[in-house]
Image (cartoon, helix red, strand yellow):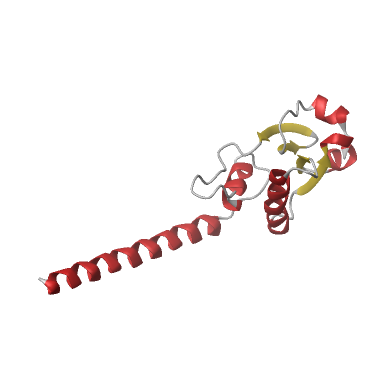
Length: 142
């Protein structure tokens, strides 16, 4: 763990416990991000087996992500701060990507934001067309 962190420009470390479902869920989303962000090292460390690092980095809640730059801890994400979707309790990969992207540890592509904007614009146009058609149908019934 220590060699990986020290030798990497950017490293995201997931402190986990193998029996915690929330850690498994975090791991699933981090695996997606790791495939898309090869510029950053993603590692996971079993918190039970590494009490020294857990104590040193003040890990109290699992999962916890520690973001390192040049071997220094620059940010920590405890649990799912700000990442929960209140409608279905699912973690949004995109939200996690944005949260880590704020630190500079992963590169946020302009296309990432453009695709999101275009998707929202398309959805809004689709919904407004449906509302217009529904409104016309009601007028015809009168």
